Image 1 (cartoon, rainbow, N blue to C red):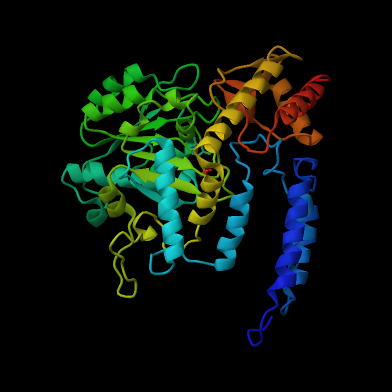
Image 2: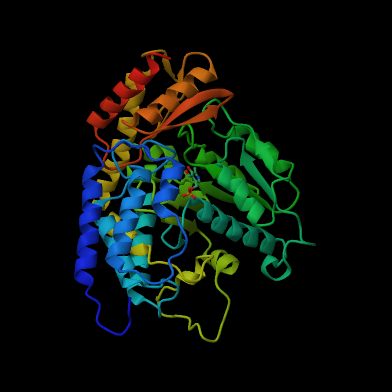
Length: 465
Ligand SMILES: Cc1ncc(COP(=O)(O)O)c(C=O)c1O
């Protein structure tokens, strides 16, 4: 590689596009889990750092050959692990362009195009989610970073209201912040609280019901016992069952007591985009902050999370970048992403988000949500009562929990066999003390035929167990 002559990009990028297109075309038929063992991958990709440079095409060829057997068909139609979105075609292509353009989305002055694409996409997100027009939006790496960013804003806001400047003084010596959570909150909430120095030792845990929803009738009592600044964390979409907390009641109760309400809706907040599912998030707009992911339901490629805040001044005070003489700040409606992100330099992830939302439009987004939920219902209907299977949850969104037989070992063995079989991929979990198979439908590419083929594979794997 030399910086002295013109680079002939065409063959490198055309060859790479060919490889990518071949991979994407193979997704419907690929073994979904990774066939390669760790040692094979280390043998293919490992070895000492080369002594000198290598030709870019040879490097890409070596990466493609070495990685292939370790790739998971996550973007394909039969990947049902964790909560994993696929990648919409326009978003994949836009993400490539964002890489080729190599724009730093830190400040407007660094990349006006990145800033405007991000601002426009953020507005579309608020519209689809039914959240307040004036809310601030940070495009972060994912739900974890979104929860942390929103809870940093919450920490600032409730402490400022108590007369404490946490950005200046830190937490030591200030009024203690109490965080009220449901028993089935997502584990990233606790991690965010650790990172923010609030810790998990003072959490007030409100019990959850049989679907994992906060027992909202207990929230008022929990808040009454709190002395000082308080934050309430709610879930729009339980990571196992897909169940939604009663957001309207919880926001009303918390608001009356002056607590900040945060909603973790990494996948569930997108219910708002569908006429048929919007009731699940009724009242969400009354919260103070919302964390969600674009790499889940909207099928933007990794990574893209959204930290949304009804109090832009608190958002900026908590995570906005400090002054430095060489970093000119923008005015007049020009977006500086560093006001809303805990990062400084970062990729232009607004570009693929813009492309995904533009390619779907309002009706496409609604269809996408409905298709995922309807296909989850199809899984549940086909599996419940078949081959010793029992569906454990009310399938209200895109998540299905299934148990085989009456001991955990049987379910774990079926999950293992399904993963080995390769027709589809899904994981296991523990739900209220019981081992369960977890099915999460989150890709634009999944069809009814994919669900039927996966059900057939699951029942085949369950049969001999
Ligand atoms: C409800 C919920 N919150 C937070 C997260 C974390 O999101 P991410 O993995 O994008 O950081 C997830 C991930 O599945 C989730 O389902």
